[in-house]
Length: 453
Ligand SMILES: NC(=O)c1ccc[n+]([C@@H]2O[C@H](COP(=O)([O-])OP(=O)(O)OC[C@H]3O[C@@H](n4cnc5c(N)ncnc54)[C@H](O)[C@@H]3O)[C@@H](O)[C@H]2O)c1
Image (tube, rainbow, N blue to C red):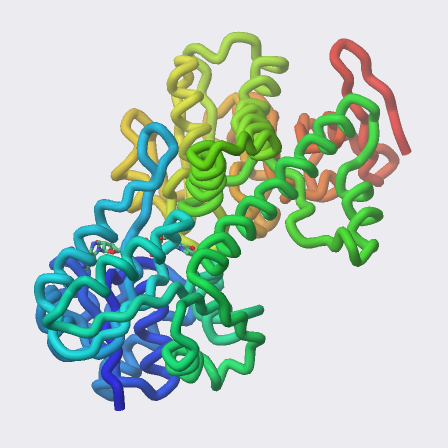
């Protein structure tokens, strides 16, 4: 049986390694971060991802998966090397390939015999062709290259890996593509066998399309606020058309995370470098940046200058069910509020440890009620159902002013106690008033108050 090597034990590499082991393979994972390897070798996942921990512990105890900092050992022992290192963005929006190049250099210098390098990392279109040429020049080893972009979503990565929508494998040699496809055979997913260039572009185009959908519905939401429509109803009505569908149709305060922002920028840059101005993506990026500012504008509308105001942020990860705060809107928002001179407190159920590494000057608190205490406004930045389940009666008693900017439309106005002013996305601002024992909702315009049934 081929031993599989996985290079990089982040969100993608660790899930790939553990899931491939679960599928019956012998897997050896390498990671440069010694602390991560120490934890992993004890069966403790260094990242939070639902279902990952028990799967890791099980396959470690069965000796189906192993972790090491010794990259050379992985190159020596494994014939198939899945590369899952980070490809962050540079300050000018291009892809930082230093981790990929570091791994490739090691493979080039250490590999002997037959090796198949399978690129799981998201790399710019054309990388596969370049690396294939580079590997083919090495005489002392027979190194082949395949592209196998990953589509898993953090927060449900194990489920996505085990029940994928599709597998994409790009390369020049059909027999090698089949060899890699056989590892995914048990997953019974449609498999696209194609060139590495197509595979690379499928990944970028998919993420860019989803980001476009988000920016589109966010602009519709902004329009809804102007004309008095409700974006949830509009999105529902649109989404019933199967050509549109209801996925990625939830309006909010912008997309974030380690993939969408960087992949959209990278695709725009890639187009530019190839002489094509991808105008639509410029708009998608700009809309997203503006969308992140909207909670600030809404806060200013109610509170005036934010200098010295105490504002609480609920949600720092880029989505629920993850501890990943990379490029998250909650973190950006906390920074923007600090920039405005506000006193910022923040809560997140899973991301506080990661947030501590990137946020200074924000009081990071493990209790959402303490975040509410004395706050003149709360901003909900993550679409976490947890927030709807909080005791809002208690929160109203704790806050200095009962203002909530719900950036993800997580709260049902009917569940809020009297007195709250609720700013949502794609709906007009509401003041909660109960009448005759029933909760009524009044829409509050700027300067005017209208009562609605
Ligand atoms: N996170 C996602 O949801 C997701 C989804 C699909 C695709 N991707 C892509 O997958 C790739 C990995 O993403 P991630 O979120 O897992 O990144 P990550 O930063 O969480 O993990 C990368 C890991 O690789 C390690 N590493 C770097 N160089 C190494 C080397 N030479 N040897 C061994 N380990 C090394 C790093 O220490 C880190 O732990 C990226 O290209 C990303 O765009 C990510």
